[in-house]
Image (cartoon, rainbow, N blue to C red; front, side, top):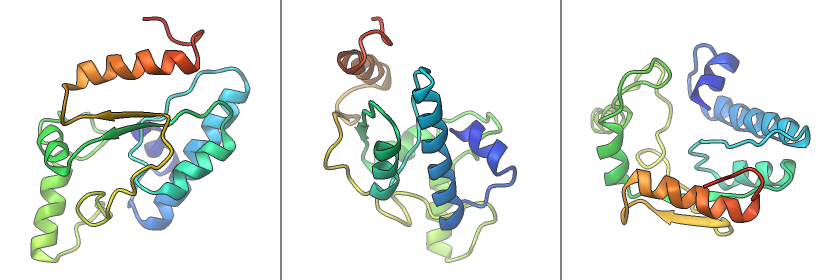
Length: 156
């Protein structure tokens, strides 16, 4: 989704308004592709329930995978991200430093888990806890469980 965001918003500000537009766009693109028979996986944080409800309403055969991830694990894993020119490195460290200093940082909107809470999902079809297992194992479990919803799309 980061590469798509850069196409829709070449200089993203991550403002509330832009995020609403981005998640609405992601859901609509997914809906159109899905209705055309193309399997779609959206890999966004989607920290607001309203965005996930919209995607669920728009997308046929919507399956939500909720990956529980304590903020400490998010920070630790994100600190190891390599620069791929899609997402700024060390977002959590930057957001935490901003929070301490109270200064605005260009191009860094509200950070889920730092400035805004993640609105937990009450109706996700699949729930995985990243504090219990490594990412590779969780990815395998997600594919295995998704295969139950769309067996023709996933082979293990």
